[in-house]
Length: 128
Image (tube, rainbow, N blue to C red; front, top):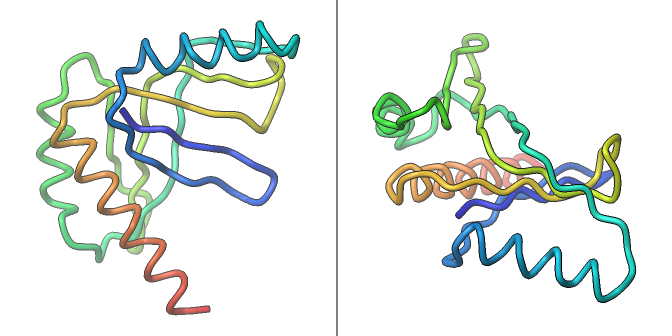
């Protein structure tokens, strides 16, 4: 399962070995027991990655193999591609810009996306 955490400063991507259903159930139970609001709804998330990263061609092949259009990778410009994921949004309310997006893809697609995300973060930290 992939987990994208959106904050006011950007977002991060994590790979979890837990099932999507178990993770969402735990999160709902936590909100219920703590008395906090939680909105859970089907949604999509999108982010950009550079085109010059390794494994990108493998991600394109994995996206083509995904059933039900859960993962889509499209070219934006000469420098980046957009990754669009279908999954579940969890936030404090419907209009919240901060929250967590979770999705389940094939093991290969999740592995590749996580690796590409790590490469992106490494490239960003080197440039800074």
